[in-house]
Length: 299
Image (cartoon, helix red, strand yellow):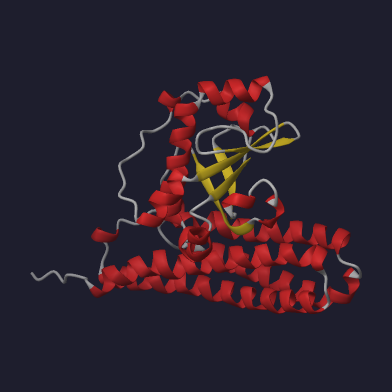
């Protein structure tokens, strides 16, 4: 965990300017109450919106970072919320819990590469009054990926999430060996889910390879828009099949009281649900709007 060390190396003037964006009330409130979780060595520091460390006594290095990099952290938080607004439905899908928690959202950054520019972010929400006394009660609401130097995402970011779904399943298998009482009792479930994961991964990447990585929607023909929408819908179908298998497995684990492991399956299902909703709402929703409002050109 070296996120603080990597962020400390970044000069604000080297980052692309934040473009003005109109936020709805949900995103405005989350931006005001966004807490960061950044690692340094073995420690994970919970940082308040005013940049004080809440969960432990900070080292001199952490204090120096927070004092000198406040403008960078302001940039980082707005950049995170802009990415959430454009490339995910994480906040929308968990808006009830977020609002109940006074819009307190935790963004836990993990470096996703070796150059300090790309990050995986896990998001949680928590009841403000019990944030420190019952930290383990936080609610997982999703994950996202961002590149500090490139806001625009190929394929609307779907490829990154598909790859993540496959990678996460591999990590899920590792956790199963350590946390399930009798892993072999669930062998058939793991095999079925693995096959579904591989199918969703392979077929989705093949579909994406056939599509333009960046769409100039206003310049496209109605026929192309319809075809692209159909292709993204097909990706959704593979993910729905996978999500349903994971849901069945989760229910069995709860019935068998596999409490040490089932929470990881629940997080996995949450990521699948978020991606399906993102495809349906943000991607096919936008494409559907352009199709139904298509202006035919008359010669």
